[in-house]
Image (cartoon, helix red, strand yellow):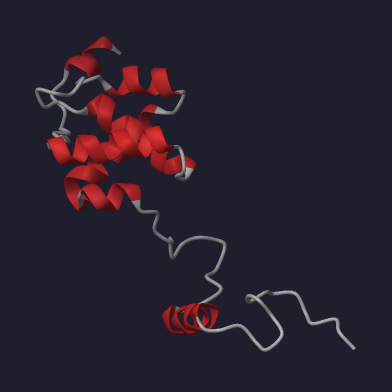
Length: 132
């Protein structure tokens, strides 16, 4: 296992000062999804820049109680797809759960939800009207 840690990393994380600040604020605010917080912590620990900690995958996995594969995938995603991609969850076409809306239906739902509510209502709701 020690030989694995000493090996040169294929996907080296080097964050800019702005990216480090954004990740730090994301963690501190605590108003984000759990996967975003975990990914932010992974990137901050893996950061090999001068301001970073430069931890190994196994150290990060042990500290955050996650798998080494999760750390490796996060590094790879940052290098291959970019900073924003790591923090954004994408729908997998191979997922067993199918999407409820396509893009057009989602846009229509958002437009309706942002419009004025029906007469006699203060806001939109999914509950049926039980008057009468």
